[in-house]
Length: 233
Image 1 (tube, rainbow, N blue to C red):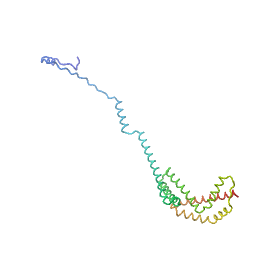
Image 2: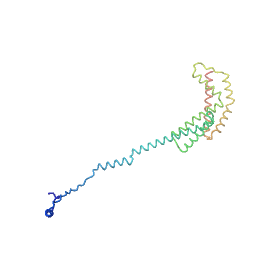
Image 3: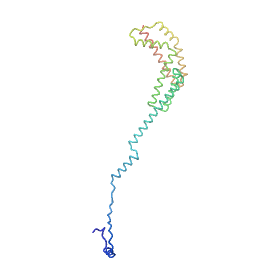
Image 4: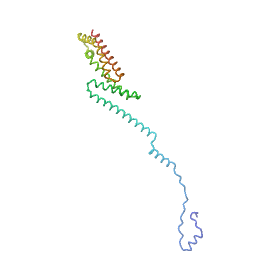
């Protein structure tokens, strides 16, 4: 007889004397203490960690995507800035020297601001490349305005020498006139170029760089002209 189902003798006799059947004894289950499995707790902690708090890898990926978005936005701003400058420059005419002057002044201003703020990288290099291209265009336009005959002769004769194997037939009278014209007008032409550069460009340093480039290109054209004369005669 188990302790949980035992009854006292007096209690049993009292039930018999009353003529009632004894009540069904209720078995008392021994109390057991269940221990929570540690793995269940760890799984809950792990799931809440992954769902609620981003991990290190997730944070790194987020920073990388934000950086990519920033670089994309900077590239887009640069592209739109260049397009805006070109649209504003077109107001001066597509074949007008003022258009080139407008682009040079504004590109130079952007570069100066970048250098003052110590901005380096491909953004600065992009604007420098655009400025160099516009400078070269201005140099050619300025020289054509003052030495168009000499430049046309050099370019046409050199092209003929390269494309044809036959000896080049150069008109001596044309060459003589070119030499006389250059000898009589080169000083005045350079002075005019100098005045134009100083009036066109607000940045003195930029203007001096362009003037140096104009004079260097003029010297190259004249050297090529002399080379043609030596080869023909």
